[in-house]
Length: 330
Image: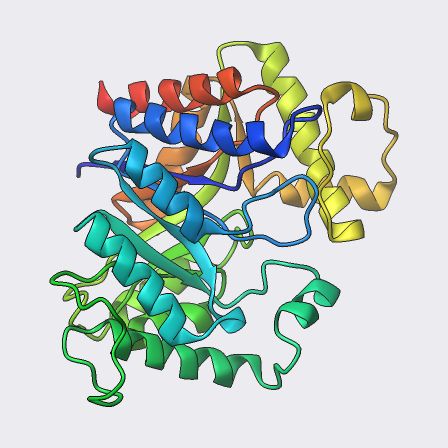
């Protein structure tokens, strides 16, 4: 099995850096990942989060695709509940027209924000599950080569090829939705580390071919930091431990460095959370990282993994991706 390595970047803020520099780091990483042979580069959508500023993936997709040549670029994923399906289809038709065969449209049911922010993004939401399925049904019809909603309503411009469509999921229920619509599925192991194997098995068993995808296609996403420096590994693990506690307690992620958190004395409750949360990410040497990734690949039965990396510098982040590429491309 040829394993495809791909990147999910959330544009995390390194403490002390400007937003402009953070977004430039995302572009720099995309160009670097293409040079290493990575298959896809996805941009996430989050709102009102201080430490993660990837709020408009469609803009970053256009910017990155213009600066790269071969790597597939996409959203991981568009928060569909916040938008008109026609507008999303038009945006991705434009992107596909500019970069045929290179654009991915990953979509998600989650809000990508805390509850208060989500209410501002979509103040009229009544039934999230029903509205999501309705919008997913509409967008797939707009994106198919023959519009089925109305001969008078088309997602312009008309394109010869359609963006690859994916559903980002963290539950069995969402995996079933992806199967019903004949979409690719990427399971967020970094959100739910216990249900992925079952969810993908159910997805494959229930998959219905679509115009966009004839056979099941699956990946999983996980946070990974790889280094030859054990001190950097220790520092990054401590910072990841803190980020998850911070997110659980405040609904926000603040830019931090190791000095900010190295002396924190966690409560017994927090220590239990940390033990659980360490299933969501891998920090280690190349040997440790490969052993853990190989185990997950076997469980998930996939030929592609989406790697998301936090680091104290863009140089450490790039080195992590290079070390992992070296593990699987040698």
